[in-house]
Image (cartoon, rainbow, N blue to C red; front, side):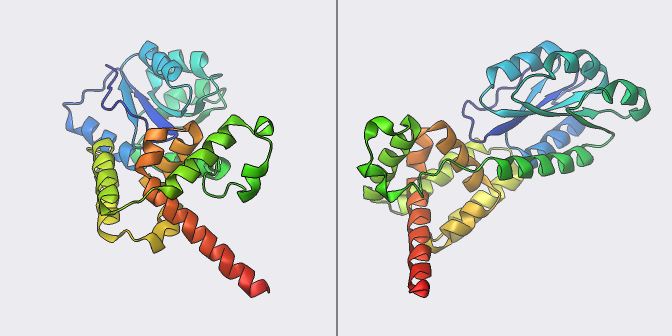
Length: 263
């Protein structure tokens, strides 16, 4: 029962929740899904170990966090533990003692948890650590002298970001660009109450002078932009073009003020 709710990946990571007893008509399961999506927007659901393995293989470009029942975990963990895109595993079971012995032999198992709240707290820490360890590929602060270098000596990704940068800075952006991005994000975060609330706040309060503040905030502006730059997703980069330009100009302004203070 793999749940394919959306076709677009807009973050660098996802949760795979695997449990034979998942029933999305059940209110408890709906509540668990809602809590997980407050931490990581992309949550994929499956009821067999084989489905989980398939999802991990299909999403090798993203970092995955697996939440498994204890019973399925015993079968699943030996198969998936060495997968490079698997960051960590969380065993979700109300019988902690039953699974402590086998689970302690697997490094990626971060704990046996009896509540989804404790798993969500651990996921928040894991995501924060991931973000700290994976600085974005900068389309904003690329070396201004890059254009004078021999193109044969430049990495393709650097060349693409330079091209994107020049195109975006030459484009004219208006309020419609903000509205279009908001509509797109609302579609991607449909059913995610926390995410939608932040998107609504962005629509109501965004101003170019707040671009850096929004970028450094741990929300859709940060996660979506970072993934787009990492994967060179031209569609999302263009959608967020006004935001990238505002961040770029704000950084330039800060650098200019710093230089004036030094002279």
